Amino acid sequence: MTLLTFEYQSITSIQGPLIFVQGVAAGSLGEMVEIHLADGEIRKGQILQIMKDIAVVQALEGTSGIDTLKAMIRLKGETAKVGISIDILGRFLNGIGEPADGLSEIIPEVRLDINGLPINPVARDKPSDFIQTGISTIDGLNTLVRGQKLPIFSGAGLPANEIAAQIVRQAKVADNERFSIVFGAMGITSREAFFFRKVFEESRVMERTVAFINKAEDPTIERLFTPRSALTAAEYLAFEKGHHVLVILTDMTNYCEALREIGSAREEIPGRRGYPGYMYTDLATIYERAGRIKAREGSVTLIPILTMPDDDITHPIADLTGYITEGQIVLSRMLFRKGIYPPVDVLPSLSRLMNLGIGKDKTRDDHRGVADQLYASYAKGRDTRRLAAIIGEEGLTPMDRQYLKFADTFEKVFVGQGDTGKSIGDTLKIGWELLSMLPKTELVRIKEEFVEKYYKEG
Image (cartoon, rainbow, N blue to C red; front, side, top):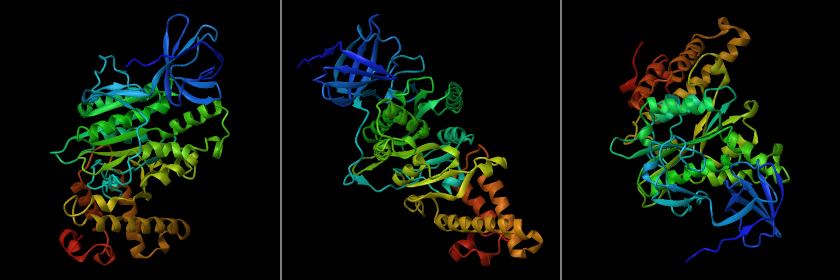
């Protein structure tokens, strides 16, 4: 059956990336279009809004050079789709899934709608088993579980990109399982794009990785496509090919800024701090695509990374992300200034699904107790540090001084592991070495049998 083609040469105005076309009766919301310029160039666009007989088209490749009298809009009769096959692994693509590495076109096995659908709650399977990131503060204290959504909250100037690259290099599951990584970057600089490409290629992880890269110089609207293209690829690898897929999206702040910019161009009524009122719903359509499906072998695990403006965790982007996801990893400017890497602030960080991914048959039977005791002891050491700043160390009790020393050593040894990955066994070993700095009587959150087995005197 041949699809009917509708063409319109009735552009009334252009505002930023938006083209207003009059007399569009056959178009539908989200439909892709071709923009034919007078010189023969063809650009891509998408219908954003239809108001009576006027359609608002967003141009994916900019609107410069478009003649309102001679340019023609042709409806394609389909929504935004991306061509996917197993051959995407090892490739660098742009935000709409086209090759960005100078290599040949990908021959797709299927063409899938990038918008997808959140997983039906009835079909969802409970997240289980942990993904080892090689970062002790995550693996040991805020464990990442397959099918989980665990964001990283960063700040301007903090090494979020380095941590993202480190997770791509080090992440692993059991040796007999298929594991892939989908990396999506939005609004990054050419220097950052070069950094990611260099790290991925030098660490030899590209054979299991596909990267969707949208640079700051690319069209703003492409940033809205990038995470959806990445998640569409992840769903295909997970639920069609049986892979356990880890998706890393950076930076969601750039995504939300693009959402605000497009909303302003459409003259929408702004919500909190100028962001669209529907931003919560929009972010949920991205985050809720992670998970596991009953009777399906694979899983999609999501780590979105966002930069908190002014380090404000109550900012709408961080606030809404926290509502939708299952915990957060928070980076600390104080630790970063001390030269500690990765500067993960343990106390406000949380993994709500941690208990589903740890234990005797998954990590180790003492894992929960060690995590609880390390957290409690470090919190007490931080309180003691504040007290010492007021009354001086001379006013502290001998036990207070031990906790003060524990907190300093914990930050240097456990948190500040550098860019070297650690297995979960090594992480727990370091944890016990730190806990052995305290008297046995202080280890009240660990079962006595584990204390007798792992505690080292002196």
